[in-house]
Image (cartoon, rainbow, N blue to C red; front, side, top):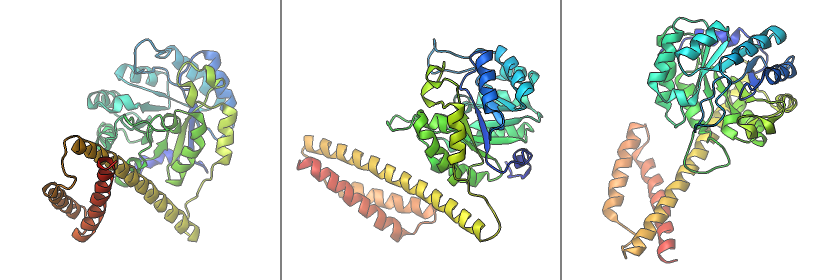
Length: 360
Protein backbone atom coordinates (compact mmCIF):
# COMPACT_ATOMS: atom_id res chain seq x y z
CA UNK A 1 0.00 0.00 0.00
CA UNK A 2 1.46 3.31 -1.07
CA UNK A 3 1.50 6.17 1.41
CA UNK A 4 -1.04 8.63 0.06
CA UNK A 5 -1.87 12.01 1.56
CA UNK A 6 -5.54 11.39 0.82
CA UNK A 7 -5.68 9.04 3.79
CA UNK A 8 -5.19 12.02 6.11
CA UNK A 9 -7.77 14.22 4.42
CA UNK A 10 -10.62 13.01 6.59
CA UNK A 11 -8.77 14.09 9.73
CA UNK A 12 -7.81 17.45 8.25
CA UNK A 13 -11.46 18.01 7.35
CA UNK A 14 -12.28 18.21 11.06
CA UNK A 15 -10.31 21.46 11.20
CA UNK A 16 -9.37 20.89 14.82
CA UNK A 17 -6.75 22.84 16.73
CA UNK A 18 -6.27 19.89 19.08
CA UNK A 19 -5.99 16.10 18.68
CA UNK A 20 -9.14 14.26 17.66
CA UNK A 21 -11.09 12.98 20.68
CA UNK A 22 -13.47 10.03 20.37
CA UNK A 23 -15.31 9.31 23.61
CA UNK A 24 -18.34 7.59 25.05
CA UNK A 25 -19.32 4.47 26.96
CA UNK A 26 -17.73 1.10 26.40
CA UNK A 27 -21.23 -0.27 25.79
CA UNK A 28 -24.55 1.27 24.91
CA UNK A 29 -26.74 0.04 27.78
CA UNK A 30 -29.98 2.02 27.63
CA UNK A 31 -31.28 4.90 25.55
CA UNK A 32 -31.24 7.13 28.63
CA UNK A 33 -27.61 6.25 29.40
CA UNK A 34 -26.46 6.84 25.82
CA UNK A 35 -28.16 10.23 25.51
CA UNK A 36 -27.19 11.43 28.99
CA UNK A 37 -23.48 10.82 28.38
CA UNK A 38 -23.68 12.35 24.90
CA UNK A 39 -25.21 15.58 26.22
CA UNK A 40 -22.51 15.79 28.91
CA UNK A 41 -19.82 15.46 26.21
CA UNK A 42 -21.44 18.00 23.91
CA UNK A 43 -19.56 21.32 23.61
CA UNK A 44 -16.30 19.76 24.85
CA UNK A 45 -13.19 18.71 22.92
CA UNK A 46 -15.02 15.51 21.97
CA UNK A 47 -15.81 15.40 18.25
CA UNK A 48 -16.98 11.82 17.90
CA UNK A 49 -19.26 9.83 20.20
CA UNK A 50 -18.44 6.14 20.54
CA UNK A 51 -20.51 3.30 21.97
CA UNK A 52 -20.25 -0.45 21.61
CA UNK A 53 -23.42 -1.92 20.12
CA UNK A 54 -22.10 -5.44 19.61
CA UNK A 55 -19.59 -6.47 22.27
CA UNK A 56 -17.44 -9.53 21.54
CA UNK A 57 -16.53 -10.93 24.94
CA UNK A 58 -13.78 -13.29 25.99
CA UNK A 59 -16.21 -15.77 27.56
CA UNK A 60 -19.89 -16.51 26.91
CA UNK A 61 -22.51 -15.39 29.40
CA UNK A 62 -21.12 -11.87 29.72
CA UNK A 63 -22.97 -8.80 28.44
CA UNK A 64 -22.50 -8.83 24.67
CA UNK A 65 -24.25 -5.60 23.70
CA UNK A 66 -27.81 -4.46 23.12
CA UNK A 67 -27.60 -5.08 19.39
CA UNK A 68 -29.13 -3.14 16.52
CA UNK A 69 -31.55 -1.20 18.73
CA UNK A 70 -28.55 0.77 19.98
CA UNK A 71 -28.03 2.19 16.50
CA UNK A 72 -31.30 4.10 16.85
CA UNK A 73 -29.95 5.63 20.04
CA UNK A 74 -26.81 6.77 18.23
CA UNK A 75 -28.97 8.37 15.54
CA UNK A 76 -30.65 10.38 18.30
CA UNK A 77 -27.24 11.36 19.67
CA UNK A 78 -26.29 12.86 16.32
CA UNK A 79 -29.63 14.63 15.93
CA UNK A 80 -29.66 16.10 19.44
CA UNK A 81 -25.95 16.95 19.97
CA UNK A 82 -24.40 17.26 16.52
CA UNK A 83 -21.66 14.82 17.52
CA UNK A 84 -20.49 12.32 14.93
CA UNK A 85 -21.07 8.70 15.91
CA UNK A 86 -18.88 5.62 15.96
CA UNK A 87 -19.18 1.92 16.76
CA UNK A 88 -17.38 -1.39 16.27
CA UNK A 89 -18.29 -3.80 13.48
CA UNK A 90 -17.22 -7.43 13.39
CA UNK A 91 -18.95 -8.89 10.33
CA UNK A 92 -20.80 -7.93 7.15
CA UNK A 93 -24.18 -7.84 8.92
CA UNK A 94 -22.88 -5.28 11.40
CA UNK A 95 -21.55 -3.23 8.50
CA UNK A 96 -24.90 -3.28 6.68
CA UNK A 97 -26.83 -2.15 9.77
CA UNK A 98 -24.27 0.53 10.69
CA UNK A 99 -24.33 1.99 7.19
CA UNK A 100 -28.13 2.03 7.19
CA UNK A 101 -27.99 3.95 10.50
CA UNK A 102 -25.50 6.42 8.95
CA UNK A 103 -22.84 5.78 11.58
CA UNK A 104 -19.94 8.10 10.70
CA UNK A 105 -16.92 6.10 11.85
CA UNK A 106 -16.61 2.33 12.04
CA UNK A 107 -13.81 0.53 13.79
CA UNK A 108 -12.55 -3.04 13.59
CA UNK A 109 -11.71 -4.44 17.01
CA UNK A 110 -8.58 -6.24 18.14
CA UNK A 111 -10.27 -9.64 18.17
CA UNK A 112 -11.34 -9.14 14.55
CA UNK A 113 -8.02 -7.78 13.28
CA UNK A 114 -6.34 -11.09 14.16
CA UNK A 115 -8.37 -12.82 11.43
CA UNK A 116 -7.69 -11.94 7.79
CA UNK A 117 -10.95 -13.72 6.93
CA UNK A 118 -13.00 -11.38 9.13
CA UNK A 119 -11.16 -8.27 7.93
CA UNK A 120 -11.66 -9.29 4.31
CA UNK A 121 -15.38 -9.87 4.88
CA UNK A 122 -15.70 -6.41 6.41
CA UNK A 123 -13.62 -4.86 3.62
CA UNK A 124 -15.83 -6.45 0.97
CA UNK A 125 -18.97 -5.18 2.73
CA UNK A 126 -17.51 -1.67 2.94
CA UNK A 127 -16.05 -1.61 -0.57
CA UNK A 128 -16.15 1.89 -1.99
CA UNK A 129 -17.73 3.48 1.09
CA UNK A 130 -16.82 7.02 2.05
CA UNK A 131 -17.09 6.16 5.74
CA UNK A 132 -14.07 6.51 8.00
CA UNK A 133 -12.76 3.09 9.04
CA UNK A 134 -10.32 2.61 11.92
CA UNK A 135 -8.43 -0.61 12.62
CA UNK A 136 -7.32 -1.56 16.12
CA UNK A 137 -4.08 -3.45 16.51
CA UNK A 138 -4.50 -7.23 16.84
CA UNK A 139 -4.57 -8.72 20.33
CA UNK A 140 -1.12 -10.21 19.82
CA UNK A 141 1.92 -8.03 18.99
CA UNK A 142 2.01 -8.69 15.24
CA UNK A 143 2.83 -5.59 13.20
CA UNK A 144 2.38 -7.35 9.85
CA UNK A 145 -1.14 -8.46 10.81
CA UNK A 146 -2.08 -4.91 11.77
CA UNK A 147 -0.64 -3.49 8.56
CA UNK A 148 -2.37 -6.22 6.58
CA UNK A 149 -5.75 -5.19 7.94
CA UNK A 150 -5.29 -1.65 6.63
CA UNK A 151 -4.00 -2.94 3.31
CA UNK A 152 -7.09 -5.12 2.79
CA UNK A 153 -9.35 -2.12 3.35
CA UNK A 154 -7.31 0.09 1.06
CA UNK A 155 -7.44 -2.56 -1.66
CA UNK A 156 -11.25 -2.50 -1.30
CA UNK A 157 -11.12 1.19 -2.30
CA UNK A 158 -11.64 2.47 1.24
CA UNK A 159 -9.48 5.57 1.50
CA UNK A 160 -10.55 7.19 4.80
CA UNK A 161 -8.46 5.01 7.07
CA UNK A 162 -6.95 5.23 10.51
CA UNK A 163 -5.27 2.99 13.09
CA UNK A 164 -6.05 2.58 16.78
CA UNK A 165 -3.35 1.52 19.22
CA UNK A 166 -4.98 -0.30 22.15
CA UNK A 167 -2.05 -2.31 23.48
CA UNK A 168 -1.26 -6.02 23.30
CA UNK A 169 -2.23 -9.01 25.36
CA UNK A 170 0.63 -10.75 27.13
CA UNK A 171 1.08 -13.66 29.51
CA UNK A 172 3.40 -11.57 31.66
CA UNK A 173 1.63 -9.57 34.36
CA UNK A 174 2.08 -5.79 34.42
CA UNK A 175 0.24 -2.76 35.68
CA UNK A 176 -1.51 -2.49 32.31
CA UNK A 177 -4.42 -4.51 31.05
CA UNK A 178 -2.68 -4.60 27.66
CA UNK A 179 0.99 -3.74 27.40
CA UNK A 180 1.52 -0.61 25.27
CA UNK A 181 4.49 -1.95 23.30
CA UNK A 182 4.86 1.61 22.01
CA UNK A 183 7.67 0.60 19.67
CA UNK A 184 5.20 -1.37 17.54
CA UNK A 185 2.92 1.65 17.13
CA UNK A 186 5.96 3.81 16.35
CA UNK A 187 7.08 1.34 13.70
CA UNK A 188 3.57 1.39 12.21
CA UNK A 189 3.80 5.18 11.99
CA UNK A 190 7.17 4.88 10.27
CA UNK A 191 5.75 2.43 7.73
CA UNK A 192 2.50 4.35 7.10
CA UNK A 193 3.14 8.00 8.06
CA UNK A 194 -0.01 9.20 6.27
CA UNK A 195 -2.42 7.01 8.24
CA UNK A 196 -3.74 8.83 11.35
CA UNK A 197 -2.88 7.04 14.60
CA UNK A 198 -5.35 7.12 17.50
CA UNK A 199 -4.48 5.90 21.00
CA UNK A 200 -6.99 3.97 23.11
CA UNK A 201 -5.59 4.48 26.63
CA UNK A 202 -8.69 2.92 28.21
CA UNK A 203 -7.93 -0.55 26.86
CA UNK A 204 -4.19 -0.22 27.43
CA UNK A 205 -4.72 0.84 31.04
CA UNK A 206 -7.63 -1.24 32.25
CA UNK A 207 -7.63 1.31 35.10
CA UNK A 208 -8.91 4.85 34.96
CA UNK A 209 -6.03 6.24 37.06
CA UNK A 210 -3.52 5.43 34.27
CA UNK A 211 -5.43 7.06 31.42
CA UNK A 212 -3.92 10.55 31.74
CA UNK A 213 -0.29 9.38 31.66
CA UNK A 214 -0.94 7.08 28.71
CA UNK A 215 -2.73 9.86 26.84
CA UNK A 216 0.18 12.23 27.41
CA UNK A 217 2.68 9.65 26.21
CA UNK A 218 0.62 9.12 23.05
CA UNK A 219 0.55 12.84 22.32
CA UNK A 220 4.29 13.07 23.00
CA UNK A 221 4.73 10.36 20.36
CA UNK A 222 2.80 12.49 17.89
CA UNK A 223 -0.41 10.47 17.85
CA UNK A 224 -3.30 12.17 16.08
CA UNK A 225 -6.02 11.53 18.63
CA UNK A 226 -7.44 9.64 21.58
CA UNK A 227 -10.32 7.21 22.06
CA UNK A 228 -11.39 7.25 25.71
CA UNK A 229 -14.25 5.39 27.33
CA UNK A 230 -16.56 7.62 29.37
CA UNK A 231 -19.60 6.67 31.46
CA UNK A 232 -21.78 8.80 33.72
CA UNK A 233 -21.58 6.06 36.41
CA UNK A 234 -18.39 4.09 35.65
CA UNK A 235 -18.46 1.79 38.68
CA UNK A 236 -21.83 0.42 37.59
CA UNK A 237 -21.09 0.13 33.87
CA UNK A 238 -22.18 -3.14 32.29
CA UNK A 239 -18.74 -3.72 30.77
CA UNK A 240 -15.16 -2.60 31.50
CA UNK A 241 -16.19 -0.58 34.54
CA UNK A 242 -12.67 -0.05 35.91
CA UNK A 243 -11.31 1.69 32.80
CA UNK A 244 -14.06 4.26 32.20
CA UNK A 245 -14.02 7.86 33.41
CA UNK A 246 -16.86 10.29 33.98
CA UNK A 247 -17.45 13.02 31.38
CA UNK A 248 -16.31 15.53 34.02
CA UNK A 249 -13.00 13.73 34.50
CA UNK A 250 -12.59 13.42 30.74
CA UNK A 251 -12.85 17.19 30.36
CA UNK A 252 -10.25 17.60 33.12
CA UNK A 253 -7.89 15.21 31.33
CA UNK A 254 -8.22 17.17 28.10
CA UNK A 255 -7.35 20.41 29.91
CA UNK A 256 -4.37 18.89 31.72
CA UNK A 257 -2.74 17.35 28.64
CA UNK A 258 0.20 19.14 27.05
CA UNK A 259 -0.23 19.34 23.29
CA UNK A 260 2.88 19.98 21.23
CA UNK A 261 2.12 21.83 17.99
CA UNK A 262 4.04 21.30 14.77
CA UNK A 263 5.47 24.37 13.08
CA UNK A 264 8.14 25.11 10.50
CA UNK A 265 10.15 27.42 12.78
CA UNK A 266 12.56 26.67 15.61
CA UNK A 267 9.69 25.47 17.78
CA UNK A 268 8.92 22.91 15.09
CA UNK A 269 12.47 21.60 15.31
CA UNK A 270 12.21 21.23 19.08
CA UNK A 271 8.87 19.48 18.77
CA UNK A 272 10.20 17.00 16.23
CA UNK A 273 13.32 16.45 18.32
CA UNK A 274 11.22 15.71 21.42
CA UNK A 275 9.07 13.31 19.40
CA UNK A 276 12.14 11.41 18.21
CA UNK A 277 13.56 11.34 21.73
CA UNK A 278 10.27 9.96 23.02
CA UNK A 279 10.56 7.21 20.42
CA UNK A 280 14.09 6.44 21.63
CA UNK A 281 12.83 6.32 25.23
CA UNK A 282 10.16 3.82 24.22
CA UNK A 283 12.67 1.62 22.38
CA UNK A 284 15.19 1.82 25.25
CA UNK A 285 12.49 0.72 27.67
CA UNK A 286 11.69 -2.22 25.41
CA UNK A 287 15.41 -3.15 25.35
CA UNK A 288 15.54 -3.12 29.15
CA UNK A 289 12.38 -5.21 29.38
CA UNK A 290 13.83 -7.76 26.95
CA UNK A 291 17.14 -7.91 28.86
CA UNK A 292 15.29 -8.42 32.13
CA UNK A 293 13.36 -11.33 30.62
CA UNK A 294 16.57 -12.79 29.19
CA UNK A 295 18.26 -12.77 32.60
CA UNK A 296 15.29 -14.54 34.17
CA UNK A 297 15.70 -17.29 31.59
CA UNK A 298 19.45 -17.37 32.30
CA UNK A 299 18.71 -17.85 36.01
CA UNK A 300 16.40 -20.76 35.17
CA UNK A 301 19.19 -22.30 33.09
CA UNK A 302 21.50 -21.84 36.07
CA UNK A 303 19.08 -23.76 38.28
CA UNK A 304 18.87 -26.53 35.70
CA UNK A 305 22.67 -26.75 35.50
CA UNK A 306 22.89 -26.80 39.28
CA UNK A 307 20.39 -29.64 39.54
CA UNK A 308 22.35 -31.64 36.97
CA UNK A 309 25.86 -30.63 38.15
CA UNK A 310 26.76 -29.01 34.82
CA UNK A 311 29.36 -26.23 34.38
CA UNK A 312 28.14 -22.68 33.81
CA UNK A 313 30.24 -21.83 30.77
CA UNK A 314 29.41 -23.66 27.54
CA UNK A 315 31.86 -22.30 24.96
CA UNK A 316 30.36 -24.02 21.94
CA UNK A 317 26.90 -22.60 22.63
CA UNK A 318 28.34 -19.11 23.25
CA UNK A 319 30.32 -19.09 20.00
CA UNK A 320 27.22 -20.16 18.07
CA UNK A 321 25.20 -17.32 19.61
CA UNK A 322 27.86 -14.69 18.87
CA UNK A 323 28.30 -15.78 15.26
CA UNK A 324 24.54 -15.85 14.69
CA UNK A 325 23.99 -12.42 16.25
CA UNK A 326 26.81 -10.87 14.22
CA UNK A 327 25.15 -12.13 11.04
CA UNK A 328 21.73 -10.90 12.15
CA UNK A 329 23.22 -7.55 13.17
CA UNK A 330 24.94 -7.10 9.84
CA UNK A 331 21.59 -7.46 8.07
CA UNK A 332 20.29 -4.61 10.24
CA UNK A 333 23.19 -2.30 9.48
CA UNK A 334 25.01 -2.91 12.79
CA UNK A 335 28.77 -3.39 12.84
CA UNK A 336 30.35 -6.68 13.89
CA UNK A 337 32.37 -4.91 16.57
CA UNK A 338 29.26 -3.32 18.09
CA UNK A 339 27.37 -6.63 18.19
CA UNK A 340 30.41 -8.35 19.68
CA UNK A 341 30.72 -5.82 22.51
CA UNK A 342 27.00 -5.80 23.26
CA UNK A 343 26.57 -9.56 23.36
CA UNK A 344 29.77 -10.16 25.31
CA UNK A 345 28.33 -7.87 27.98
CA UNK A 346 24.99 -9.69 27.86
CA UNK A 347 26.77 -13.06 28.03
CA UNK A 348 28.77 -11.98 31.06
CA UNK A 349 25.65 -10.76 32.85
CA UNK A 350 23.97 -14.09 32.07
CA UNK A 351 26.94 -15.95 33.57
CA UNK A 352 26.71 -13.76 36.67
CA UNK A 353 23.03 -14.65 37.11
CA UNK A 354 23.74 -18.37 36.67
CA UNK A 355 26.64 -18.29 39.14
CA UNK A 356 24.45 -16.62 41.74
CA UNK A 357 21.99 -19.49 41.42
CA UNK A 358 24.63 -22.23 41.42
CA UNK A 359 26.59 -20.75 44.33
CA UNK A 360 23.47 -19.55 46.09
